[in-house]
Length: 319
Image 1: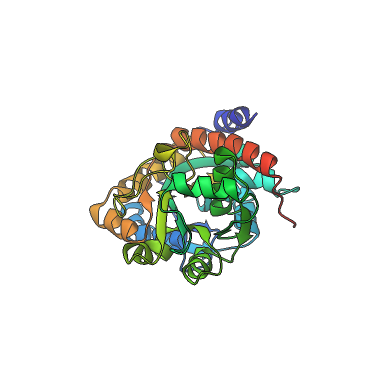
Image 2: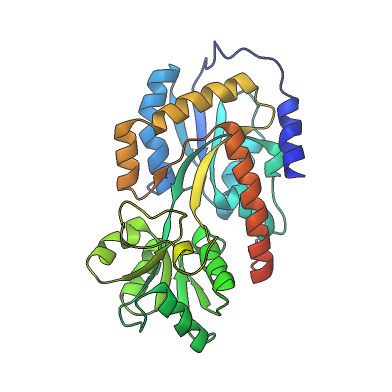
């Protein structure tokens, strides 16, 4: 159904040259508040895009409802390439299973342009937890079902879903504790108020390196250059585990293919710029340039994957 929706929107494109695009400023609706990773990455790209496109790229922060508020504006915008959206794994894949009512249909209302970045997470623990490896942690959790708590960055976030997937694949019962962001979750784990957490790199890296948090595993498919000695969840007992946060650019459905291709070319070129790559990695995010087709396929696969996890964990978000 999702594939059919994307295919239908692509087939409906009018033939339109992109040689004179853009003729006016481009608005990029970022579904996060200023200062976060997604906002920071977009603002890193803006100077280069301004130069290469010959028009101003204006960032419009519209956070709220897990990204639904900002992307609903994009879904209703003219399909001319002058309004784009930056959405994350939640709004573009998981929210359709988390929310009873959605203001848009991702497959029908958007054309993927490119992924921007992947955000790996780390499963960490307070040093007081009597486990030093993921194998030990799983054994401990099995011996104390429903007694160990694991913090995450908020209900419905990628960190929450990472914790749920870990519990399901490890066949353990952990008490999931939501916080308002990765930072507070990491701080409470550091303080010993909660034993475990799934957090991002910016909120945990220095504490891990200082030995103040134990890093059991990273949630990404590959080890991270920032933590080369920390294994992935998959390689130490849970093969196939992969839970990475991400965000990317979408345009309204009906945006002409030549315009999507031009935007993709400039965005992906920017994501390969050495200075931008270094700045993104300093933020704890990994550049992830893709073709529109690859991003479309990834959104589809993520939607299917998280629908199963959410259903099994019985996770719902009250609106």
